[in-house]
Length: 170
Image (tube, rainbow, N blue to C red; front, side, top):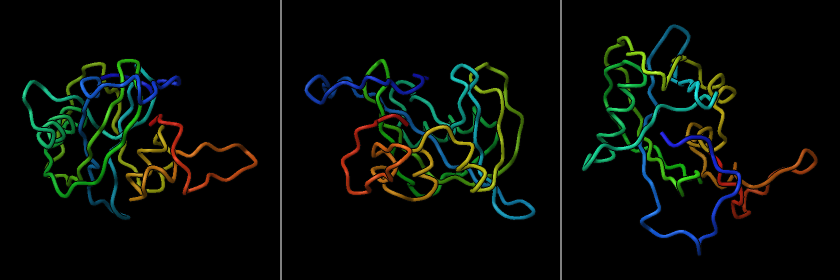
């Protein structure tokens, strides 16, 4: 996977359509005592917590990519539900668009150790909001437009929900 967001995004004039990379993933839910839990994965390479996702294989439709990546990163058999939204951010390789689908657990399994993901945590929605490393992924979880969470902010100023996003990190 292309990694952490690039702190120096390109301008629109520097980006061609061919530069845009795509990935897909899922919000994988399971029912548990005390309510629903969301799968969140830890990537040791970036030391971050994200929703399970990844790049498509050659000619693979993105909805199938989402299923495969969630299975690979969580070890679970899953069923894809409705489309949940997109996250867009800059990487060193160029802009990336990640499409997410809602998913439900069919059967828990064991994950193959591959070094890409070293931990899967099943969290309440509130725990996931705290643990997820990227505001845009929290926005998908909260069903909010990404522009609400990507507006620049300082400690003294609340983000302006109507502002154009300038921080395109995840």
